[in-house]
Length: 231
Image (cartoon, rainbow, N blue to C red):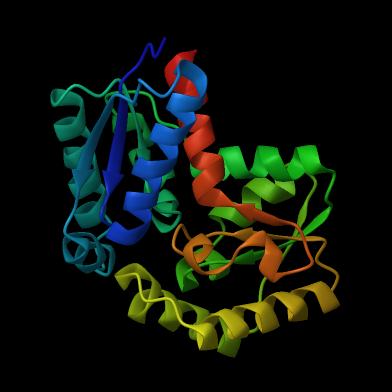
C-alpha cells in the first residue's frame, strides 16, 4: 500500500518530468499490480521562472521562489517531495531548514547507488552548474568516491545540448555520438562509471550506448521516491 502521496516539482524541464511520472507509475504498478497507479501531486513550473531567478545575484530570489513552490505542493496534498532536476539541488542546503515537509534528494540516492556498486572513481555529466559546482563532488568525496568531470570546452558543449535540445525533447544522433565520445574521454582518464547528472541525459544515453556502467539519476530518484512512499 502506498502510504504517502508523492510530490513532484517539475518543468525544469518538462521532458524529464514526464519521465518521472511514467517511471513512478510503472514502479508502483510493479508493486501493487496493473490495476494500480501512483498517488502523485505534480507542480510543473515554467522553466523561465526558475532559470531567471537562479541567474539573479541575490540568492534569496531563487530560494524564496522554491520554498513557495514546496508550500503549494504541500497544500495540494503531497506528503513529501522531489525536485525533478539535478541542478535544482544546488539550492537545497540554503532552503532545507525552511522546507515544510520531507525531501528526497537525487544526490543522496545517486551517491548511495554509486557507493553500493564499489566504484571508487566516477565521471559526472550534467549542466554546467552541476559539473563545475560542489554539491555532487562533496557528497561523493564524503563517501570515498573521486569525481571526474570533462574539460571546460566539453562542459560548455554538454550544457548547450541539454538546454538547446534535450529539455525540448529533441534527441539527435549527432548529440548521442558526442556524449558517447565525452564518456569515453572520462573513461580514458580513469572513470569506472558515469553519473548522468541531468535528468534529461537518460533520454538520450542508454546503457547499451556505452561500455562503462551508467547511473541514471532519473531512474534512481524515482525508485527512491517510491520506496519512501511505501515505507
